Length: 113
Image (cartoon, rainbow, N blue to C red; front, side):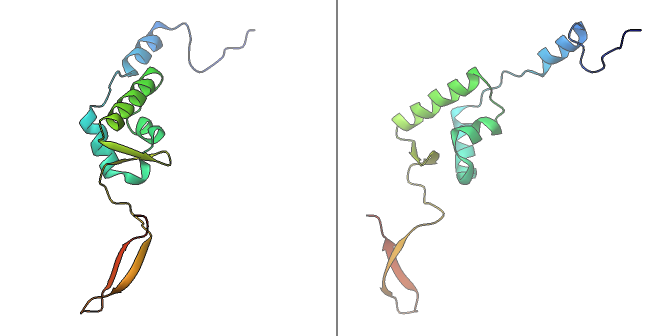
């Protein structure tokens, strides 16, 4: 007696229809990408953005082109594979302390000028 293999059926037309419906051709807008980068500065690389929006294959190439366009327009900057909006402050910065004010609060400026 032949053994029956359980699991996904490759010849079943019902599973092919289901797989076709699951595939979604959603591509986020530029505003949605910028909003994601602003809300998730620690996870703002190409890979993380693609994962957040479930982009695969050709959609990842499309994302790469959009991010390059945003960099060329001066909307985004890229440092160490992380993207950030222009003018956004980093979470951690190296500062040079140069004194105290009247209330005893330290006065500092960024070490990188």
